[in-house]
Length: 151
Image (cartoon, rainbow, N blue to C red; front, side, top):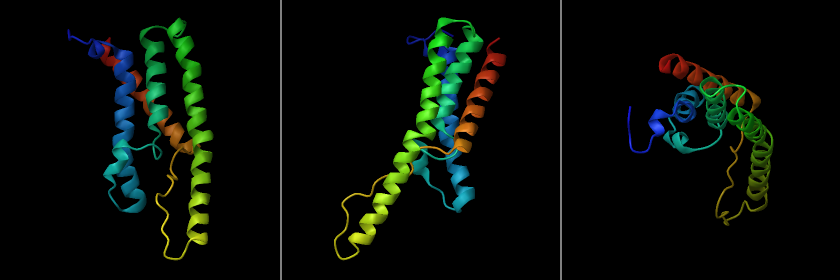
């Protein structure tokens, strides 16, 4: 496969992008089963099941391990970055979501008169550990499938 950019010849790139795209797509039916409502905005939003951050980074990390080598400098660099992203998604960003939820509640309680808050803070910023785990599993599956197909 020869293309001017070369990204479609890069299995590590494809592993990460496909894992991310599948995670974003899966969010719509997952949310539908939970709420019985279709929310197409989830295709381009963060948070939710599964974690597209975890899927993207694990797809890249596992893809790098499979295609470049688990003993390569590429894998050595991307692995800790993946750990930081997953930690951030399940820790810092999740806590920021909890804070946004509490602030929104305070605004509703304090300003329950005619005044409307200009913009509600986003409450779904991070991921539960289960959402991150499903993102990790999705990233591993995509990397493995691409490796089998590529060889």
